[in-house]
Length: 368
Image (cartoon, rainbow, N blue to C red; front, side):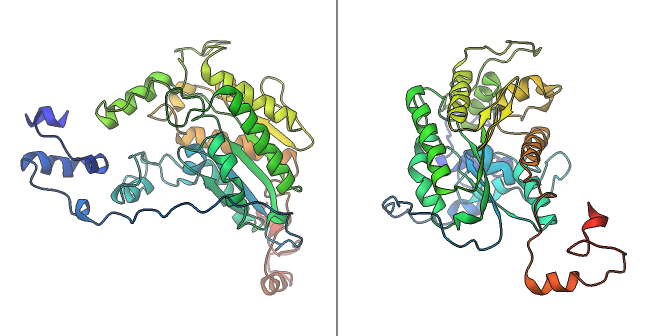
């Protein structure tokens, strides 16, 4: 659109311009391609060295370090779960995507926070009960996570992990993309991932999160706009109707088939069932986010992210509350877990408080 405005159809911006802001593009076109933003001349990050051989997991660590860990594994829906700002109310905030764009590492996707993991982190930190580790990676699918799982778990004291959220399938189902994983392999990968986590983290509850609703048309329009038509985004998601009714989004869409496979893998792993009659299993739970967003989220279309795929601020709150309620049913919510504090501050706060009777930390009763 800006090319047409400046009658510069024969002037094509360089590939690095994908991360430039509007002002930089205008300077480029007005100067006939002579003016580049300052950050365009920054040296590129050094090429990554050859990947190390895949690590093998040994037995779980024998001694807990004491600080419980909530671990989140998945794709960009997990990675962006730690977004903080919402551009609708904080227009001057430095978005994470701005920083990454200047390093030529990211497609410009503004934050729509606070993210579901940021909200969980707030709760566990407020209670000084646990840490939240985000191990989500944009583009991750079941094949890559299965291969990378030993490397991701190796630095962690595994006895400290009390719960793991696993969210996969949003990339696996996209036929024709580099991240596509055929259905049979997807199910095999999910079985293997859940089994490996249960073996490596025997004390942890698993929360399997299926793909949510993805607006096929909106995502395709978004990809076309941000890539100037160079990439076809039509393979992701499903057709969504204007009115959400039973079966309105295609009961047998490609996306829903992967949702069903994820649910089957969760049930086989002892995590229970998700959907219309969810039942928690002895080893965790399944959150059928696709079903929940369709039938339990009011005015879904008004809550969609502008790209039709990632979580908006409202969807982040919905996912956060769903996971928080699930953890509460397992007696693992922030207010149900004991506080974890170093010895000196614990001793100090166990002394008499000017606020009157207190529990073990001197603040629990007045804050909960």
